[in-house]
Length: 99
Image (tube, rainbow, N blue to C red; front, side):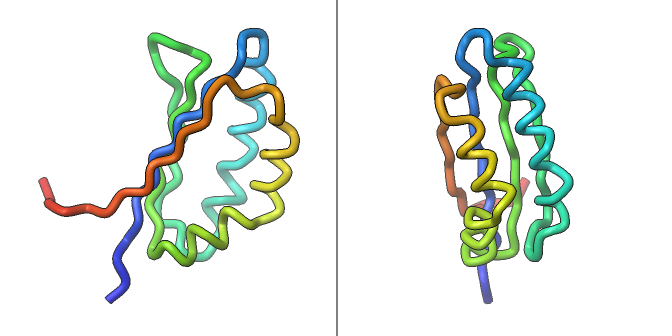
């Protein structure tokens, strides 16, 4: 059985790039939700640091998430945001206990 994959991605805008980055991350949501294997794709903005966006994602498998990472809309995001990011961290998680 293929294990589900949870992704937490922290994306922080450089000073002065908040509006630009917000537009770019919002543009990822709808096309990604349509991708094969995407079970959850949630975009959040930090209440204390408005420059920080956090994606919470759930994928059917690591393989399908890897395909997402190669999709044209994500590659366009990487190209468009070059120089606008203060930080980008991506965590790949596997659930080990349920609540």
